[in-house]
Length: 143
Image (tube, rainbow, N blue to C red; front, side, top):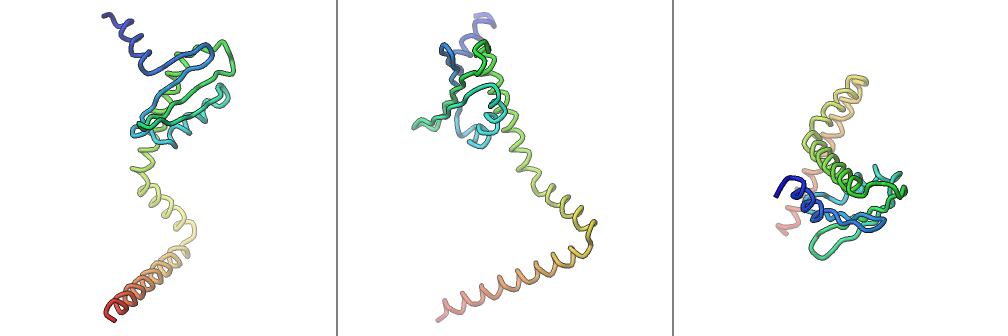
């Protein structure tokens, strides 16, 4: 089988086309609902979107182009590319969350050094309160 035919078979398995729509099937274990929403948001000016979920954890994404001359296969593949883009973005956000938080804190604290003292005081008060609550719960358990 040559590459063109393999590509056609591949396309038929992941993209289903109708006269004026294209349906994509996405595994929710691979792409979160927020990733699907993010990718869909990018396409709102070009398509109407309908989402549905089956019993197997697959999300069906129906795209109805606003411009009837839109190439449906290309539209579907562009949507898949956008899914991958937002999945990568979301994973990077999670991985870099602690570093981003630390950078923001340093920027804020360098702009207003008094915030450092206030943050330290709040953290101390929170720790004291937490210890007191633990002590109360241990005292109740002993009774």
